[in-house]
Image 1 (cartoon, helix red, strand yellow):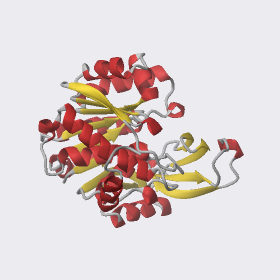
Image 2 (cartoon, one colour):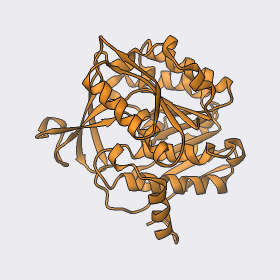
Image 3 (cartoon, helix red, strand yellow):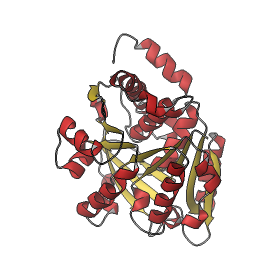
Length: 324
């Protein structure tokens, strides 16, 4: 297996229109989502072997989400079904095409109830990369399950990828979120943050200063996504900003998930990630990841928008001269 993702798979309730706050949206349309699940699907579309570990309700939404992942080529042997808890819902509004507001209905959601004893250990022991986000770290038992899964994968030599994916309304306080993330970061080889998360964790919005501080925690790679401004990386050899591709953005939801899937694919599919941590190679990888994120932004909804490897290749060929 190339990439195993663990965490939430949800029903994303997308707004009928852009330009309104949550309380003003006239209607919502259900679509499959959840950041780790999005990463698994994005990786599969890019040609990787991917799997998803998580828990959903033993009801219509839960089985539908499992079917969606299965149809997308994601291995779902690690999914579990809870007969008592419901599949989580996330209502989304977009005040503009690059900004999202979220409200989650999971009290608790089935994804929060995954236990360590329910993990598919064989799957974790056989993967090249293990990816997770911070939502599964918020409370027990999913917190212990996540950390146990990361430990199993690391012991087997996998790259450990951690996307902070901070959702303020799900934490009791920013301080709690910061403490939990900072305690987990040393276990990751790849740490992905956005500009808000960089400032939350390091107290600095300077890309150079903040990324250096995060690298000192233990990861080998720190990546900062910058939305329409591209992305930034830092490895031991150095760091650099990689410009975005200019495209007509419809919906930026899930672009970060598409980005990290592309990054992981380039690092681990058919390659040793430890041999690729040069500035020149990381610049190349992030340009590819930026392209995947850009293509995802051109269609509403995450999974329907995720590009295939062939689509990315055509896009990059058309933009060979530069970004734009």
